[in-house]
Amino acid sequence: MGLVARAVRRDRHRRALRARAPSQAAIAWSRSGARVRRRGVAGGRRRRHATDGRSRRPGGADRRDERELHDAAPRSARRGERAHRPPALRRGPRLEHEYVNGRDVIRALLPLVIATAIGGCASTPANVGPPDAQARGASQHVVAEGPVEALPAGTTFVSVLALPQPAGAVLGPHSHIPGFTYVLGGVATVAFVDGKTVDVAAGEAVFTPANVVHVHSNERGRGVAIALAVLLIGAVVGLVMLSRRGWRWTPLWLVGLITIGAIGVADPTMNDWYFIAVRPEAQRGGAMPVPAARRTHESAALADLGPGPFLERLDAFVIEPGGRTMAHRSDGAETLIVTDGRATICVGGAKTTVERDQALTVQANTPLQLLNVGTAPLGVVRFSVRPKSGQLETLVDSSPC
Image (cartoon, rainbow, N blue to C red; front, side):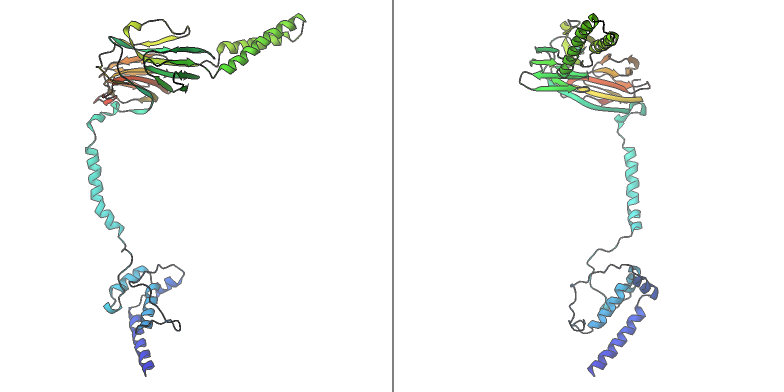
């Protein structure tokens, strides 16, 4: 009798489940091979008998059948079925978070995004200035910098000397005012008295402090120069010997000799570099350290920058055609040296054109802006000296052009 009563109860329970079961389309969708993620049940897995797989609790088989129908249905069908399930048949708490409707999230965040965008537009810094005062098509990087305790006493000026060196040439040992060795071409070697040696390539610079003994040399081209000298001497000797014998290839030998001589005169091993520094007025127009040196720039007398300490710095700019730097002023003096192209420098409403291997110095607290009105990229090196506590660049409200 117990088995019959149990079978009757199970049959009634299955009929009730079929009345609430999901549609046949949902079950067919599950059986088509789509993967259905199973959800955990509070309390862990239920143990089953090893003999028939039924639960040890009364009604275990009925509960298993319910779970099979529940897991076979899509999520949408399971959510609808779960809402109408009797409390006795509802499953325990979920072990994972409920899904969040994306539209609700967007509706909640949209006012915040709009308010942030409007606030960002309204809070634009006042010192950015109008469009013509902002930088465009210009890149900048720091080349080198160095501290200076004090500038020379009395009136001072900015000096830019170009000092080319042939292969194997040596300048020094000596010491002098603080300044920068900026290389335009080749490789310049700077050896300090403490044993430190720096090879400075084109576009690089090294700072030499005040009164530190050092040597400038062109070591990289020494081997090439020796080889050219040997070839030249050998060509001359061979030409003399062959000409005495009336050798018919003498004209070709002469052409080779002229070629070697032209290479030697052009000297591809030559390096070229600037020495940039603040000098006392007494050194204006002084003797050049080497015969091939050229005086690229000597500024007017600098305005007083205070007692110090100071910071000297080199920056390199590359400005595309039609580009410009930002309009600004500085707490120190700025010297703009053109290394490639032609620059237009706006200072106080006036425009000045500066050619390659020329420079212009702008006094402290004077608005300036650098333009490239040409068709080729513009290369500029800026030397600045300012109080260590001062600002190098402060944006201005309008373009000085």
